[in-house]
Amino acid sequence: MVVGWSILIPLGMVVARFFKVWPGQRWPAVLDSPTWWRLHVVLQSLGVVVMSLGVLLAWGRGVEGSTLALWHHRAGWVLIAVGWLQVAGGVLRGSKGGPTAADLRGDHYDMTRRRLAFELVHKTLGWTALPVVVGTTAAGLVMLDAPRWMAVLIGGWWQALAAAFAVLQASGRCLDTYQAIWGPDPRHPGNARKPVGWRVARRPHVHGDT
Image (cartoon, rainbow, N blue to C red):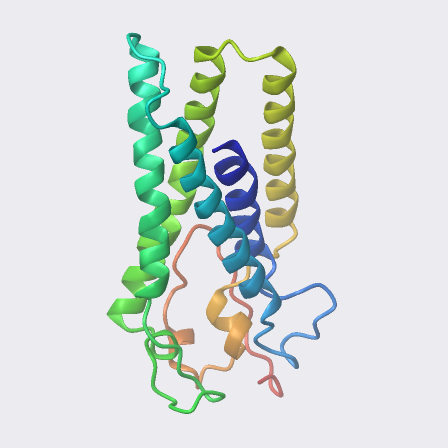
């Protein structure tokens, strides 16, 4: 569960938020880098699979009887549900569309209600789950009276992730997915809408950009 929810899934979230334009990519002359998407899918999929294997290993072996144990179990099931809901949301996110697609019209290119709902739910569920992950992991360590080095190692990992997040956010790398794929040209309909999410950057259109 720690490998899935504390390592793989957060890394996939960082990639999706900050690396839609890959380092070295000459954006907006070069658009729609597939690297971030592939990494995001691989990391999140592996995270959900590992999480599910963790459930099977822990099935019937939980520590019962304490308020902390009850909270840990309930929070754990919430996280399992969130993980699989994210998978289902990704499958149901709708079509892409756009100038490079066979059909220009698409849920993402047109930013339909379906796409807007997907982005709002997907991002909200993902980021609000992380504090629950930290609390659930800490509760599990206390319940099992885990060695001190485990808490130090896991705590240090989360601090490193938080520091990387702060640096990447401050550097302006959180570019809107729509612009990362199709550029800032106002002729693309999604550029007329406010991006979904907290402090997601939009770049102004410069004459000659795609």
